[in-house]
Length: 371
Ligand SMILES: *Cc1c(COP(=O)(O)O)cnc(C)c1O
Image 1 (spheres, rainbow, N blue to C red):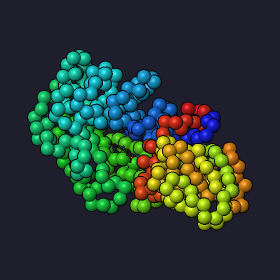
Image 2: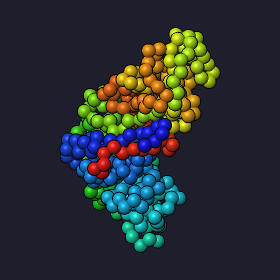
Image 3: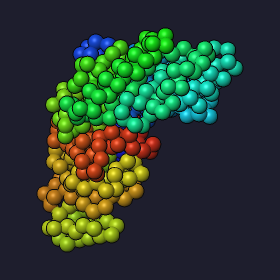
Image 4: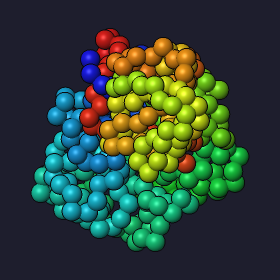
């Protein structure tokens, strides 16, 4: 156990989320474990997700995929943000499947495949309207390109607004995806794996499942969008991570005391303050206002600015909290604590950013020993 802060990860909650999503969509599930599994720990989460029924792993970076291989993870892995100039030889020798979104990337992969003496497994990414990754202007040229060094096993795209179910852009992107897949088929390329859905579409849009869904945030028990889709609880998801920290210090202060850098806040009455041993270097957003911690079953809001290693909460004058007590920064909300959604809203951001930014100084502690 850590002496000041820890991110507790409940792999049985992760497992419940994965198996439920898998059962509901009834297609293959690719577990998205990029960015250290959204802060929850790459290898442990990948292993637990596979055990719970995911059949594919998805990462952004090649190094993430290679780390999985180094840890004896043998499942198919797709890496979709592997830029030109990357070490494609290692990718191909380690059976990492590559998302391809440019001719330059494709040509480098083909060269590498020749060198390694093995066809590269690729998933063609198409831009269906998000205007971020995927083939768009080079699409026609791709259809005449030499694909002899690669095996196109997948075609995929990504939704921009799946977390706003009912938005017209979703149906537009779905139509465009079908059209682009059709154009590939016309030139004799019929990738066995077609995938479009992220978590939000997996929860709300049956028409976009195809043969596989890519599930990230929902697997961690968090809502893709608290405003348009409701809370984790509304969606029946079990949040996987609980962030805890110790009260470094508890002190009594009088009314009108200026708190923290810039004296941006003053106490409004005689009260007790708690110094929480975690700061922006650990992923607590410096701009967060309106969130706080749960201390002995009671919410204590942040007062003043968050510092690098610590922030201050107002415990109230009748608090019995003591230096050294553990407090919950965020969790599933079932004890009255703030959630990752609350922290997201308090910092003009989203739960995704809250969990992925938990810093490397915070140990990840796994609670379920089954995995
Ligand atoms: C991150 C990512 C996902 C997962 O999105 P969630 O909203 O977390 O489910 C799926 N596909 C791609 C291409 C991604 O980059």
